[in-house]
Amino acid sequence: MSTKLTVLDHVMVPEHKIMSEEDVSKLLERYNITTEQLPKIYHDDPAVKEIGANADDVIRIIRASHTAGRAEAYRLVVRRPKK
Amino acid sequence: MVLAEKYAKKIDAADLPQKTKDQLKKFLDEKEISDAQFKHILERVLAEYQSTRIEACEAVGIIAAQSIGEPGTQMTMRTFHYAGVAEINVTLGLPRLIEIMDARKEPSTPTMTVYLEPEYANDRDKAREVSWQIEAAPLHEFGDITTDMENMHVVVHLNTKVCDKRKIAPQQIMETAPKKIRDRRHYRDFEHDIDEAKATIIFSPKDRESYQNLFQLAEHVRNVIVQGIDDILRVVVRKETGEYILYTEGSNLKDVFDVVGVDTTRTRTNNISEIASVLGVEAARNAIIHEAVSTLNEQGILVDVRHLMLVADMMCMEGEVKQIGRHGIAGEKESVLSRAAFEVTVNHLLDAAVANEVDELSGVTENVIVGQPIQLGTGDVKLIAVRQQEN
Image 1: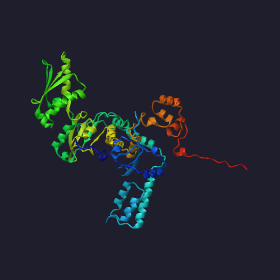
Image 2 (image 1 turned 180 degrees about the horizontal axis):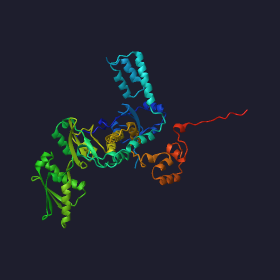
Image 3 (image 1 turned 90 degrees about the vertical axis):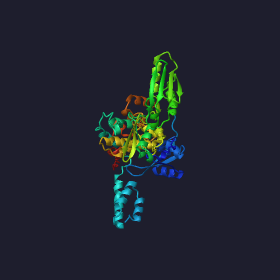
Image 4 (image 1 turned 120 degrees about the horizontal axis):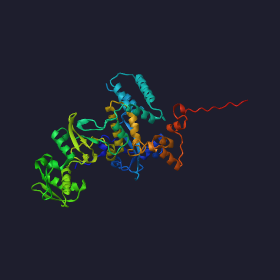
C-alpha cells in the first residue's frame, strides 16, 4: 500500500547514530565505565534495524529533552534474550 | 542589532544545556552590553546553573517516588470511564497512571490519534475516506442478509450503492468475507457460492441436520469484518487546529501506518507496548513521559517532568519496557531485604536463603530495616577519632 514506514521520521523517535570506536572509548573514559554499564537496546529494535547497527555497537541518541532542550544518551546494542 | 558573533561563540562554548544557551542568547539579543558586562553575565549564569544541578549520589529515586506519590493521592480514584476527546471513552486518572507504570500489554481503553497527510487533512470527504479504510465494518453494513430456512442458506445481497460510497468493490467483499470467517473467526464448517453478476454470496453449512448450525453461520456472516482494521472499533473525525484528525477506539499502530493518507510521522497510540514494538524503546520512553504528564496534567496535578523522565528511563533501561512492580524494576534490585520489603516477602527471603545470597546493606531500605543510619546525607559522614597517645 503506502510507502515503507521509516521509523526515524516519527516525532516520537529521537535521532539514533552508531558511534565510532574512538568516540566510545572517549565516552567510557569520561564516565569511567565499561560498555556493560550503559543502558541497553535490543538488536531487533526497529530504530536499530533502521540504522543498521549490530550487537556490541554503541548508539548515540540525541533526544529533544523537556528540560535541557537537547540531551545525549547512549545505549549498547545487545541480543534480545530468548524467552 | 543582532547578538555579536563573539558573544554567541562564547555562549555556545560554555558548559550549559542547549535550552539555557538559547534563552541567554534571546535575552541578550538587541541589548547594548560591554565585554565586561557580558563576562559578568556569563559567569553568573554558569554559577547559577551549577548550583541547580543535582549532587552526584543523591537518592533521586526516592525523591521522584515522593514527588509523584504525594500529588497522586489527590487524583480521582474511580475514573474508569470518562467522556474524553470526541465521545471516545478514555481511562484517566489513577487507573491510567497505574496502567502506565505497570507496563500493561494492552491499556483498558486503547485509542489512537491518527494524523493525515496534507492533501487528506484539509478535505472532509477525503478524511472520511481514510476513516473507512481504518474503521472495522461488519458485512451486514454492506447489504441485506437473509436466512433461508427452507434451503438451509444464508444469502447476502450486497448493496452496490453502499459499496461505491465506501470505496470498496463488491468483488473484494465477496472474496474477503468467506476467507475472514475461516481465518479470523475460526469457523470452517460451511461452503459458499459467489454470484458476481447479482453481487450475491450464498453460504450454506456443511452439516444441514440442525438449524443451530445455520443460525451460528448467519451470526458469523453478519459480523465478519470486511473493510477496515479488525482492532479498530470506531473512528471519529474531528477538525482541530485547522486540520482533520481521526480519533479511534481500539489501536493497531502497525496496520494503521499501512493505510494510504495516514501521516506516519505524527500518528500515535496510547498503547505503550505497541509503540515499543513498532517504533522502538526510545519512542516508548517518550510515550511513557508524554502519557504520564498528560494524565497528571489533565487532573490539574503539576509534577516536574524530571521525576517522570527518571521513571521512564528506568523502565526502558534494558532495551524493553519493564514495569515498576515486582516483575520489573523492584524485583531486580540487588538487595534481598529491599526486595522482601516490597511485595511477597516470604518468597524472596526463602529464595535468597536457598541461593545463599548476601546483602551488602548499601541501599536505604536495607539499612532502615536493620536499624542503622542510611548511607546518605548526615548518615554518610563518618568520623574517625585518632586518640592522642599518652605521654
